[in-house]
View 1 (cartoon, one colour):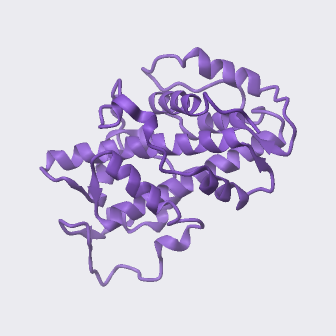
View 2 (view 1 turned 45 degrees about the vertical axis):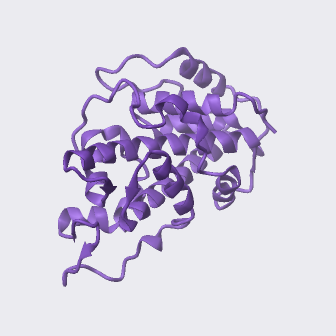
Length: 259
């Protein structure tokens, strides 16, 4: 998939009030973490993880809406998801979902009709199901709320893909955060932040966060806000999406304190 320059700012319906929508509840976030670790997850950490996940899904939906608009469609179909990922490599997250989804198998033969329904094929395996990913489908309600907030509708197959990507992304985020806590900081991953060619340098907020995380002072039993921020820098390699996710996550916890 080819990368194209990311947009300088988000242009979807939520631009003026991006923090008003919180479709992924902290309680659901904590449930994902409990699947991976017995560590305590602070309240602010849960809010940050929910915010980052929302930011990522919002960007994917916005890219898909643009693709649908080019074909004069309002309802999003799996092909719009593929188009969004093809145009912006930063959106390629939660890729473990790809091997379970007919959408990505479609690159080698699965077809969809205009309503996003899979066209039957004798070559298509019926043994593999999207639910093979642990935790998939738990984000469906949040995905639908986020779609509505973006003024978008989607066929069931598209909702399923957004659900699966959200689940896998948050699971990966939780896994990285747990490693950071166990190792006492971001030492395993280093403190140098990668920057893609042609991108501006990361803002001071990002540099300062990583510098602090390299010498983590919290206990080894609690995943905190900064641990999620560090995990976000690992999961989101693209500077524009990463910067926006970190900025919105900081805003999400501005009025909350760590447990």
